[in-house]
Structure formats: structure tokens, C-alpha cells
Image 1 (cartoon, rainbow, N blue to C red):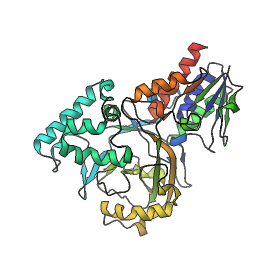
Image 2 (tube, rainbow, N blue to C red):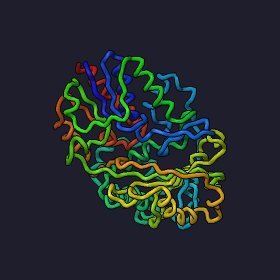
Image 3 (cartoon, rainbow, N blue to C red):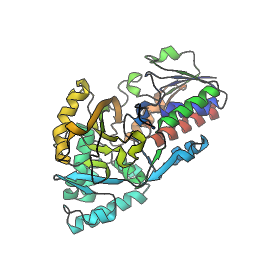
Image 4 (cartoon, rainbow, N blue to C red):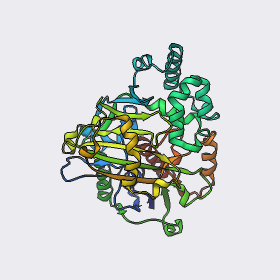
Length: 405
């Protein structure tokens, strides 16, 4: 049986490895010159480790990823640390990754803090996402946390991430974000490219074929294949079936000195006036010695696909972001500290998941030809995009194909 896999990201490679190991003829088509999709990366001359174009980490609850890493004999490379997560609000960075931090957060009163803690705990232990998907995250969060806590903690993030779609997003999406989050975060020694390269090597050893710089523009090109797995965004092949996706702009700054000097790894921007929603200092999580002693700062957000940023250069975006970065650290001398910066861009980085999305998803899957399988960010719901769910989906699709063959 000949199987075509459209997309050489983590999903496509995992499915390719599983199926090639079962003696299927696997052909992977990747439009870019590198494998990995959103987890692809780069490596500078004086670096020992590669770096992803878009920030990545694993949670302790990411069992599918941990199991795959173990099977590939990469467990010795997986490590977990507890980096600091903070929020930027009212011109100040506040650590916000423990119950104690919540209790000492000065912008909520005591009852609001207790209420916020109880609601978050409920989401962590609950498995009932089905009832939550019937209501928007916006309405549910106002009701559950109260207006004040919502406006401070969640409204800026919903609006910063989803823009004009902020009021439409299913509360099940928010549940998933809280449910799976862990204070300890994982990473692979050498970078996630190690995972990509190992999977590709295994596929080739099993006789699978991988084609880079090969964009499948129409499924008719794959008419000679028995099964087709689509791991890329579905719009190209099935227009009008799914809600639109948001794009991502990620500015990667390579610096001489630490920017978030309090040691924060992940900084949520809870200020609606900012043009980005997250600042992630990778080297406050991973030791900068692996990058030639340089410090890595990601600055980015999600935007509508027609946003002007997608037509701007890295330098233009950096100049627009700079005044806001100075608000976070007014004493930082970018002119002295910056080595270089580069731009990572994807117009397909975040699905829009409105209320009752599971019904839409089920309807779409039933409408597909029997030999076509969808396994992409739009179909991992209620979970959000991420390496673990890419792997989980690939395993599911590969198993389904084997069982139905």
C-alpha cells in the first residue's frame, strides 16, 4: 500500500515512521527546504544546539511526546526544569506561576484571588470539556473569575491572541490550556531538531521517501496513492470547510546580555496597547552556554493573515516593537547588546476554534473521501497546537490505517 503524507512536520514524520515500520510504502512531501514545520530550527556557527524558529517546550503531562522520545532512544536528551512565568501589567513584571504568586498579586482583592485559585483548580481536575465548548471562553471566564479578574488576567490574552475572534473562542480551548499546563517544562538537549532528524533517519531506514521543496498544490497529484494523510492546514485542499487560521510573527533576537533580568522565561503581556502578546527568553530556561554564551529572546504574537506585519521586514518589525520592549526593561541598551535578529513567519499558526467546534469537526471528517485523513492543528481539538498533540494525532491516524487495511 502506497501512502502519501503531505507535510514534513512532527505529525507527518511520526505517522511516516509508524507506517513505514509496518512495511507500507511511505512518501512524505514537504514544501520547505527543511523538515519540522513550526518546530523547525536553525543553528549559528558558534552554537552547540539548534534553536526553533518558534518557541517550544514540553509539559510533564505530554505523555505521547515522552513515549515517542523513549522509543527513539532519546530519553537521555530530555530534561525538565522549572523556569519562571510572569505577567507584565501596569508597567511591572509580576511572577505568576504558583498559588503564592496569586496571593501576593496586588491588583486583585482577597476574594478575587481565592476565586481565581478555586476556578483554576477546578479546571485542572475537571475532564468535562464537552459542556464548556457550548459557551465562549469570554463569557465563561467573566462568569467564573468575575469581571475584574477577567479584565486583568484573561481579556488581554484572549484579545492579544485571537484579535477580532476573541469573543468566539470555545471555553473548551481555555480548559485545555489550563488542564495540560505544568510548572516544570521539558526540552531536548540539542534542540527539537534532534527529534525531527531522528524520525527522518528512521523513515529512510524503513525504505520511506522524503521529498523537500515539494509543494502538493492539488490532491489530484496524489491520485496514484492508496491513502493520503494531510498534516498541513486544510484550507488549500478544502476551502470553506474550516474557520480561518491566524498567522504568527516571531522576532528572534540574539543578544549579548540577559533582557528579562529577573530570570523570567515566559512573560505574558497583559497590556492591550502592546503589539505582541508574549516575550520568551529562551536562555532563562536553557543555559546560554549552548548558544555561544548569547541570549535568545523571542517576541511575538498571532495576527490576521492580512495584517501589515506579514509585508514588513525583520528590521521594520523590530523598530516597531522596540519602544514596547523598552517599557518592559527601560535600562536595556539594545544598541550595545544586540548581535542580530531574524523573523519567523507562518500564516497558518493558530486555528480559530469557535463554540461547538467538535460538531463542525465531526461533520468535516465524515464528508472526506475514505482514503483521505486529516491530521493537523485544526483537528487536535479540544487540545491546542503543540508537539505532543502532533505526535498523538499521528499515532491515532497510523493506527487507524493499519487496522482498516
